[in-house]
Length: 93
Image (cartoon, rainbow, N blue to C red; front, side, top):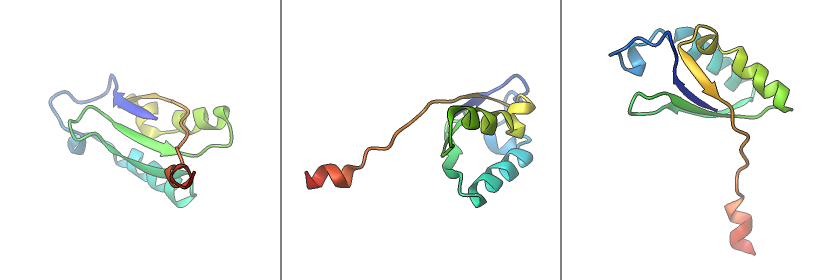
């Protein structure tokens, strides 16, 4: 998933200055459940990216829709299905 600043984004403030405490708590809850694999802000303050696992596309959409930063419109979110390449397996071929 890719996040972009939403309509509630505070202009002129970098990511660390935005009111994203609840978003951070949500990300931590996903991580402790084993759903979130990695996440972080873009260093140019244009949003961030998240990789997570979901059982289905509907489940993935629900994860995105439940993010407090999406609900509050701090972020908009683009959901993209993604598959990792197993490079070790390819090397062995």
